[in-house]
Every structure is written in structure tokens, then in C-alpha cells.
Amino acid sequence: MSALDSGFYFAESENTPMHVGSVAVFDGPAPTYGDVVRLLLSKLPRVPRYRQRVREVPLQLGRPMWVDDPHFQILYHVRHTAVPSPGSDEQLRNLAGRVLGQRLDMAKPLWELWLVEGLADDRWALISKVHHCMVDGVAGTDLMQLMFDLDPDAAHEAPRDWTPRRDPSSLSLVAGAVTEAATQPLRTLTGLPAMGSAVRNVRGLAESGRTLARTVPSLAKQAVTPTARSLNGPIGPHRRWAWTAGKFEEFKAVRTALGGTVNDVVLTAITRGFRDLLQGRGELSSENLVVRTMVPVSVRSAKQRGTLDNQVSCVFVDLPVGDPDPVSRLRTVRGQMDEYKRAMQAVDVPSIISMGDFVAPTLLSVGVRSAMQAGQMWCQAVTTNVPGPRVPLYVLGRRMCSAHAYVPINGGIRCSIGIFSYLNTMTFGINADFDAFPDVDVLSSGIRRGIEELLEHARADQATPDVAQPAGAKPPARAGTR
Image 1 (cartoon, rainbow, N blue to C red):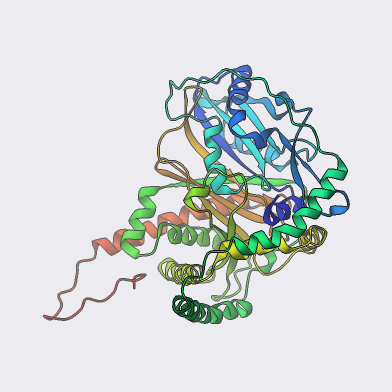
Image 2 (cartoon, rainbow, N blue to C red):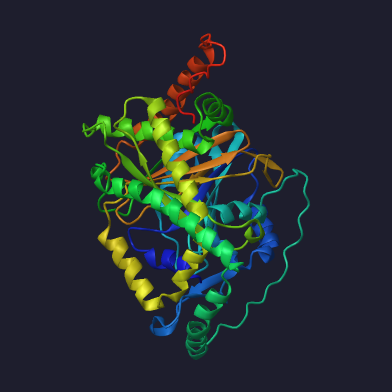
């Protein structure tokens, strides 16, 4: 494993299962359990990791390794269940919340797939779980090719026999770990991008320094900004899950009228959700109050797509929940994201991530687990946006009509929002601690209201006629634009 993947593995605990997941809903009729199993068996050779389990190196002299599971049995990983017919979306959410809240068996390959029957309107669903140490959100989207097709009439190969490679001995694991410890730092250093000429280096470093210097004041400001710390705290073993959705046309209309990016509009809608949540709890104490969310950023290059490891960094965005003006909230979010984009361009993020390869595995394990147990008060949520396909997907000829993402919570962060786009819809999957978020539906409905209020302002902006300007005068800038 890479250092980052190892961190996700070591973060796993009784109350913090570290798998990502999804719920995909299909138009019926549902396939048989046997058909799903045979489909997966035919696809598994393309993703060998799904037949591998984690093997820790004795005394943690090296990072955990992936080895073939000699006892792999697909019937253990593919489950079959149903909701009472005709099952509602609420029943599916409750079932998915229970399934996704349960830990994976860490002694086996770290994934599960549940076939769910009984939904109303002749629909059915697939609930999938994959440990975060196997795959990040963007790579997870690439893995849809495992069982999804672009053609409803796609043909599939017959399952093939598989022979696992022999499990390495403890002695060979230790020897490999020692070799890795000696050679990895050198490989990391020699793998850094070439610096080019001295002149370009000096100019590039100077520009990077100026960009980072402009970013430091904003980071310092975050340290003194009041945050909604009541959202932080211990995490229990149970989860609540909710979801809502919006159309791409809605986000694009707001972006066109008020400025920013689709992602800026999404974060602003989420801000309204947290504002409603805190207002309902009587905790909206100040107009300067923010909910700080960690936003994972993929640093995976185009040629790395399809690889099964994590290539992510993150930024911390202050959602201005105390601000009563939705357009002002959009400007605030947009300004932060623009600043982070400049900073990310100035820093070699992949190289920084690879520096984790220098950390001794034992220290990495102790450090990650201690941090997760201790918790933190710096941020209150995780918000991750995973771009999905804009074309229809099929499983065994059945068309997927919607999909919802599941993102784990840990380290004192008791709420996460997974955003997934498919066709012309963007869904928000909200995962929250069961005891801390009995009002999780307030958050999900607030996000929907946030989309609608931004749309109202966008339509009003477009309907306002331009005021006649003197010849040669520049028109006033629209709110939210630069």
C-alpha cells in the first residue's frame, strides 16, 4: 500500500468503518442472484484487487500489503435481500443506512455488493461497499466498468477459473519491507519532476512563493473564525443516511447568472442546509459563524485513471452559514475556491503526498489511529464531489436511473456529504452519526431549499433589465462576478 492508502486502513476502528459506498437504483425487472454472481465472476479478472486481502507485515516493519485470498468465495461478498413490496425510497434509505454502517470483514477482500429487490414501480437496487484503502472516489467511478455496461445488449464472457498466488511467508514479508524501506525514499526523490533550467526554477519558485504568501493570510483568518463546533464530537457505531438531488440545469443556470463554478454553487446550497440545521437547533449564534468542510481534491492525472490507489489531497472551505444572503454566501465560497485553485497550481501536490512514503509504518499506524481517537475541532464536515458518467449505464440490460454516494465519517467529523453526478442529475448522499444527527432530514431538505433560493436569485438577475449607461461607461459588475 501507499502511505495514504495505509492511513485509510489504519483509521478503521469499531466506530469508524472506512469504506466508501453507493446505492444505485435500476428499472426492473430485477436480475436473479445467480446472474449477478456470474456477471461479477466474469469481470473480476479485470480488477484483481477484488480477490485480494490485506496482510500486515510482522512488527509493522513495512506498510500493509495486498495478497491473494486463497479462500476467496464470491458468495460471501455478494448478498441478496429485499424490502417489503412495494418498497419506498425511505425504506431503501433505511436499509442502505444499516448495510453501509456495518464494518467490512478486514480479514477478507474489502468489498461487498447487495442485491435489493421489492422496490415500487418494478425497481431494484445495488448497494456497494469498498474500503477507502482500495480506492478513492475518482478511481471508484472508473471501477463502474467492473459490472456496468454502456450497451443494454452487451455480451459478457463466461467466468474463468482462478488460481491464487501462494501466500508469502512472514520472513519474506519482513525481507521485502526492509528492502522497501531502503529503496522507496530514493525512488520517490528520483521520481520527482525535472526542474528544468535554473532560470525557470527561480521564476517558478518565486511565483509559487508569491501565491502561497497570498494564501497564508486567509489560512490565518480561518484560525480565528468562529466555527460550529457543536457539530464535532465522538462518533458511535450507528449511522443515519439521507439524500436529496438537483438537476444540472439548475446549477448551470445559477452559475451563468451569478458567476462561479458548478462546484461553488453546490457548496453554497450545502451552506443553506447547514444553516437550517443550526437554526433549528438554536445554534446560529453569529453572522460570522461558519461550518468548515474538508473538500477532497483529486490529483490523479489522466494516465493514472483506472489505477487502484488513492491520489487525493484536500482543502478546507468555510461555509458562511451565518450570512443570511445566499448571493453573498456564493461570493464568499467562490472567493475561497479561487484562492485554493491558485495555491494548488503553485504547489506540487503529488510530490507532497508521496513524502508520506518516508514515514515509518509503525509511526504512521500510531499517528493515524491516535488522531482518529482524539478527534479534532478544525473542521465539521466532509464534502466530496465525484463526477460520474453523463451517459446511461446498464447492468444485465437494466438501466440505472439514479445513484447516491456514501462517504465515511471519522476523527470527530460526524457528518459527510457525497455528491455524485449521473446523466443530468446531481445527488447528495448524507452520512451522519445516528445519535448526533436525529435531524439529518433538516440538512437534506435545506440543501434542496438552497438550490431553489439560488435559482430564484438567478432568475431575478436575468429578468432585471440593464440600466442605460452613458456612452463609454462600463456597466456595473454583477454580484458574484469578477
